[in-house]
Image 1 (spheres, chains in turn orange, yellow):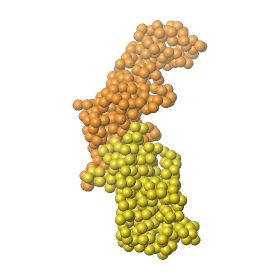
Image 2 (image 1 turned 30 degrees about the vertical axis):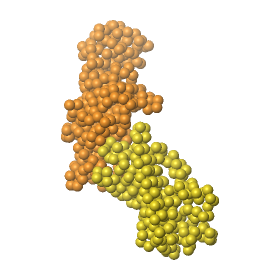
Image 3 (image 1 turned 90 degrees about the horizontal axis):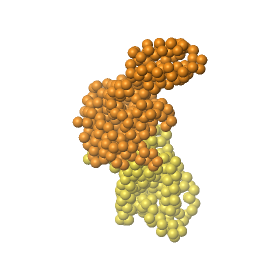
Length: 319
Length: 256
């Protein structure tokens, strides 16, 4: 059974169409990534699935329950870790966890044990009785995750779990999420606008752009679908002949998406190792000096560009 | 049951957080005392303002208890704004927390604080020669009036907080409602000394319901019928504003 099913979700705020027919499905126990630039509609989608926002139309099931018709059944089955920390700053880490457990109807020794276990799991045991105001960003984030897990949910939503964290804390958070995915039999839906994060954590990803899922699959599948590798040739001395060099590369069998940029000529080829000798000899024969050649397998960046026709970094910075 | 348990734990959270703010505690204790001493002095020479009490301070004490309670209630929505800003509310709403429990806990918290302040004011009043002529029952009526006034206005304040969701708008709304209600009330002067139309208007002012109940308990004592009637009206007002605030969650959830 699918842990999450979203069908044609739509939501409009005044002049923004935040969701424009979002559809995807997440299998039970998998880590699924919603990937897209800021403003793509990821958070609205997650808030809808977590029963915070009502969609204008469409349907969503989480843990088998309809988010609009039975929100409280969904709430009992999910943990929601919002993009912005929901930690009560004036309370200690432990008090935050105990209150959340009590909202879920837990209490007594089982709750105390569970809280203890979670503090250990997210590495906050020593800080448990300190007021959360003094926590670092990474600590607050980890407390948020523990708060989301206190009632042993079947589905955990992590909305931008590493946004605003420094690189070190981000790496630690990745390890945390990987451990959660392995330990608890948990379905995790995470949103991110970091390509490398989706690549590393998610078993499958859906790329979201302007309120729609444009493609869905495992990172490997998505990259494989692009067929081919990127070859970058750095010319030694071009004397303004870089465009001519690009034209030369274009004549090579299988080379597509050829582009010149400064002293660099980039091209996509079906197989880098096979294509390079031909590229080198052809360029050499036309009198070009080659300083270096590199090949690269396609990244999710390329996938994003391929399916949306837009450059990820530019899109992300623009919003 | 679940509703009451959730409400109880949320009250524990709020009271505990407040107890960690020494400056807030100091102001909560000192501010009503300043009102009582300041106004007590300001109007003490105007004999017509005593309204049957032996001293103006005796007349004023129940008024200040009520003023303090309804101001406290009117401003209590600031706690909701801060919880909204810190996304604590989102965290509760994505869990099976009752929306009514979230409101009720804030409303009851406002009532508890008003009762504590009423106690402090009454103790100062006693030191200044005020007598509670209604005896033990009188004390309860004063506490009841303070708690219910704070709660009725807290419900309203939390509804506004959920509608405006911004501190500046919240402050404007609290002032817009609070100050006029204070001046069309018998907090500082007896209705007999008011212009006729204000006296008439003041009968519909919930603040006045509390003032009349508390003043009867302190200045007169006995004849509890009207006092209980006023407290009943305040119970109804509390229920109405709390339900209004709970309903306002819809507006908030439409905005996120």
